[in-house]
Image: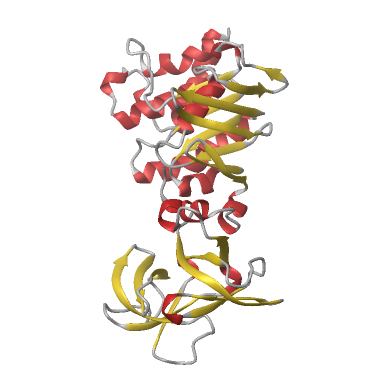
Length: 364
């Protein structure tokens, strides 16, 4: 259990962050650069002392316990390898320090080096490796340490895209198979979605949401989470009508559409969000849907499996839709007139923020 506040001068880097991590859980702390992720990890590791609050590892309050006595291993972004030791000696260091016999320590080291694709460089020194390789050695050293709690600070950040994707699930599997508990810090929402049992979204040192990947993605609790985790379209409007089935939201330019939300009052200012991949574009006048909004394609970006279209509505608002590239007849052209629609049940409706939508979407 963690309940901490940390200040650096007048800057409140961690503001009463309160959460628990279940035994054997893989928790991802997700947030933009500068959100306090590394500070939170270093507080749990004991490298930093909190100004307020308590940290429990198991049933033990570790506030006054040294880092090496916390049964936790911290894997930093900066690798922190022993330059005078070979790769395998670096990885064996933890098991040997715990009194594991040398041969067993070596077997463990070889196993985790094989997992991170570096068993063939076991006799190399850190300066002979690339930055990505050094990060993999640091990861292997943490995995071999035998600690119950693994604290990973952007463990895949220096790897190339293909290896990063391959190692995501292998890292999770090894942690799960070993019975370890992991707290994994990342700014990559796709990485967090793939490996986490639960995700903690952090912004400006404050927890924005804590839940399973499914709930964080499908039920974002505020505007920032809906934007940072997955990306959304946002429209500013006013509740014009409400009944038991939902509400009608009116945009500037007298455009309107339906949402499933019934929690906001008539004439209340709201923000409506919906996922880009759940935004539909169709051409021609047609029948459309009650949520159909007319506009013009202003940008086309090919993303491999998806094509992302940006559409300027007739009132000037900008929307985006991610459409499978393989869909027959899906290709649209710049300046083509289209209609945009979305299912009212796939919308998130939020109170209008005091500082405005733009400020609410900012990372800081």
